[in-house]
View 1 (cartoon, rainbow, N blue to C red):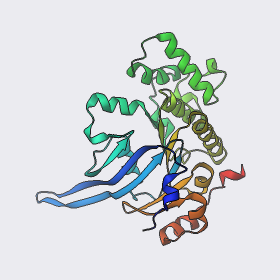
View 2: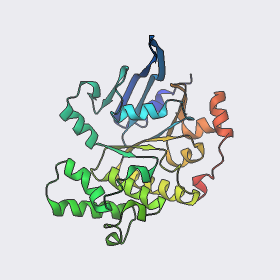
View 3: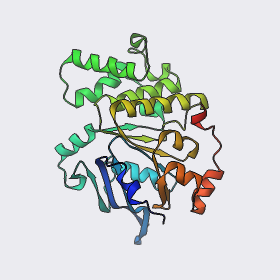
Length: 280
């Protein structure tokens, strides 16, 4: 396994926002009528830190463990072992109320925007919902925050979209709504799960540019989950390559992509076919 240097781990002295230490997420296998049959080690001993205002990429093909890692960071899976620490708080030790606090600081951008948006809610209601759950009681404040979020994701004139439903929007517009919803509680970091993989090539570049502009404007930390190495150097500072539940290679993006050492990383690079977003 390739490890980072102290310089890379330091990332110019920026504060660590999220720390993952020896994380394991195992799923038990059972034989029908015969009990325990072993484990699927979806995540097996993963360790890394995410710093303030940093974007990291976690890359790998389907089945490598990146989705299980993401769901555990989001609190959707309980770890089998190890720990996740956010702002010096171990998530495994948090109460339900404290986990609600954690979730308010984490934005989630899903892969499939159409599936992520409730079909029977209009856009205003979709974006208001997190504010209502988050305790923002003043209706006018909620509406203003909805309008601000839509303007930030370039959905204007805002009044043209507020009363529309998801099926009335293009794929790119749907993903902008997903991003607006992820940003509306002013999170400390985003988890972006293959956010452009289901979009047309031209729209992918626009969405990546939007995410990067939001990251820079709000000093967000971003975990960018992807199998597409062509977008990584445009959007990320460091890269972590996952295979069979393990981090097999990691480092600064340009250094690693320019000189990959692991055969799996080389194979991922060989399979890269999408246009490089840097050329847009």
